[in-house]
Amino acid sequence: MNNRKPQRKNHTKSTSNASHSKRSHKPAGRSGSHKPEAQRRTNALDKAPAKTYIVQEPAELLSFLVEHVTGMGRNSIKSALARGQVSVNGIPRTVHNFPLEQGQTVALSKEKITPVVPLTGLRILHEDEAIIVIHKDAGLLSVASAQEQEVTAYRQLTAHVRREHPYNRIFVLHRLDRDTSGVMMFAKSEAIQQEMQKAWKEVVYERTYIALVEGQVKKAEGTITSWLKESKTLKMYSSPYPNDGQHAVTHYKLLQANRHFSLLEVRLETGRKNQIRVHMEDIGHPIVGDKKYGSKSKSIGRLGLHARVLSFIHPVTGVLLRFESDIPKTFLNPFRE
Image (cartoon, rainbow, N blue to C red; front, side, top):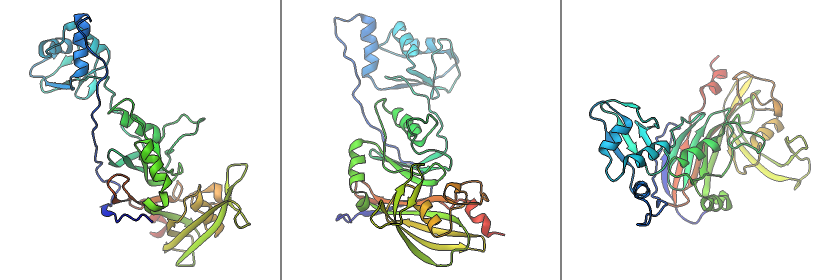
């Protein structure tokens, strides 16, 4: 366990507001007296911060910029428009005669403006200079393989951080299966990724899941231990032999049950691929909707597995953060009848 005594800071809902940080970046490009006047004026924009202007009366975009922007000639402004450095109310505009209306905000940026694309299947719970914590919906891939080109959490968050600077990146810390929902996080630098992964057991205090499983679990709580291996068909399974594979330990506690279903709180001591899914099959109570690991029920229309709690020591501040997501309502439906 980490020797530092962390300060505790709780974030208890998946609807928590994200905290966004901004970085300053040195603009590229140099100006010199040997360059033509038009080029010197264009480079003047590269050195200046983004400027905003409020439209006071109807006008066309180019005419408005020529009238209000100082230090740039008409040709330089036209070039900035062509490069996508001008936005109106946050939307990039390149048409010279785009009609402006009173009250709109025109922004002239030093770099090409990336349009804001709504995030699909995820919500940002927390963001700072080091990490991004999200809630991922069921059905969204965390990270795609080389053969998969569909939308993923990783790709969307990469686009998100690159709106701040085109060279920004994110780095994978852990994964959730496509059909598992809940809390997960990414690093915003390779150094943070390596630091956290190297000391994962010490910095991660809690990873708790909610599992809706088939059948009535009799024990109020229990621990499942096995050695996990992967078959040629890419299915994980528990080896019948000790020390044969990756050691996996799963703890569970019964929350609710009836004759047909049980709701479990599951805590990971180790974090192996498909660990909970394999272990639930091992005890004869496969996760609802998990056909790959023995389920025959489709009662909720998705996999009955949700990452509810993620608690960890922040890699920079040393503060203990805790993020919790509500149990999906569909998980409770089998107990309302």
